[in-house]
Image 1: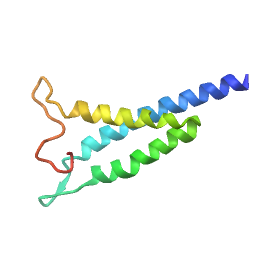
Image 2 (image 1 turned 90 degrees about the vertical axis):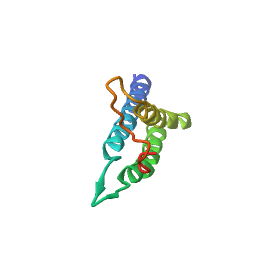
Image 3 (image 1 turned 135 degrees about the vertical axis):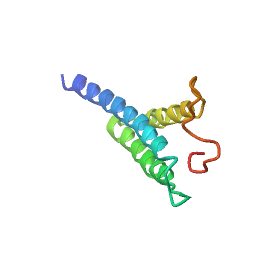
Image 4 (image 1 turned 90 degrees about the horizontal axis):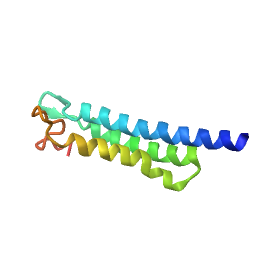
Length: 102
């Protein structure tokens, strides 16, 4: 029983860290256009540089499998890639003239 429970908890941890990777990407996208008195504030960059390695470490620590690093990183990349395209309504979440988002 404990073997099955351990495996279930590892899978749950991997799914949770993957969802957190996508959530961090959404928060990053929300902060990408942040500016103060005409100056862009690179909070998105700070969150990505600090948050993503922590999520990768957490994925490996929770699952015990070194290949788990790709789950949160992949979810983050998929969200950012999807946000870089223009929506059917014409909305663009990551602007090409914003060095913080690029």
